[in-house]
Length: 309
Image (cartoon, rainbow, N blue to C red; front, side):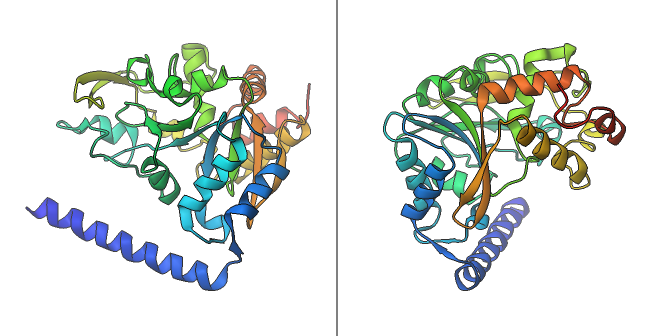
């Protein structure tokens, strides 16, 4: 009873915060239309038929007339009916992978569990024609030509980002790009695809020792036990998305610009970027061979000048 009341109170507080944020943006930020967003995406080099993995900050776009759904429609306009969109729709009831793994009675159910990733992923998840992968912590949702193939095997993958996960299948798609809408180079889970592809050969030991099996129900209600290996919290403290790692985010920004891989542009009111997925992955592999990863120390960054080949 108390837990239900606490959940209801948290939900009410979050709804109030969102309403207040929307009012502030509506009155203070530039107004942006679906057509303007699609035009910005086109200037960024997004074309019909492409497959996009999108990380985003909705509020950075300005006040979008029509809200999150208009952003989704603009993305669909940009890639067209032969294109594909993927968004992270992660559900982490424990707040972290490690804490979620420690929950004794947790069972992921896509029919009732939403996402903790914000308004744009929430709206995407509720949209027509969207497929969602089955995973207890890192469920991904997709729309378009490759949606079924990209999401259908996640619960059978050996790790979150490993073989047959949406990330590894996405890397194999032609014309695939990672798109950052109003975000830095920090909150990009695509980085972890290299860690799982390399396994113990990755130069930083990023995982805890034990792999957990977490229960999931698929869309038909069948139960699966899905392997999840938590990240080492001590290592995560020096990762590129940690608030104190401005140096690492700036290094990756400048490095991918210097390599000619990152296309930069304005979408709505947001500074945005995109990088071809296969080239992104291979450049991350090259950097790792030179001891630069998303966990690199200041000394490791200093030892490897930006643009070094």
